[in-house]
Length: 129
Image (cartoon, rainbow, N blue to C red; front, side, top):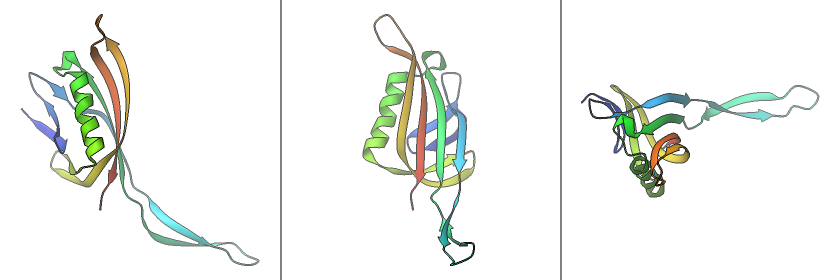
């Protein structure tokens, strides 16, 4: 089974049995600045460093992809509540150490018994130094 990457116990993979990959990944890198007021003139800008990186992953979990959406959501909730820190790996690239900061979920389909058949999830990771 090809591993496309991982965030701790959450392994991004594609196989004959299941597909668990981000549909979209956004990474935000930014700098931090301070403004110093000058009497009678324009303020002066000073770069004070870099902000922590943020990564947003959008994923779909469906039974057709070989996944149990409720189980996948539960795994994410455990990562959030533990506050654990893990490397974020994509292919052979290590993007740094991150912690799960936020989960947004939209349940898109259930069966007649209320079981989740499909869900869309957005998770926000914050760099941990």
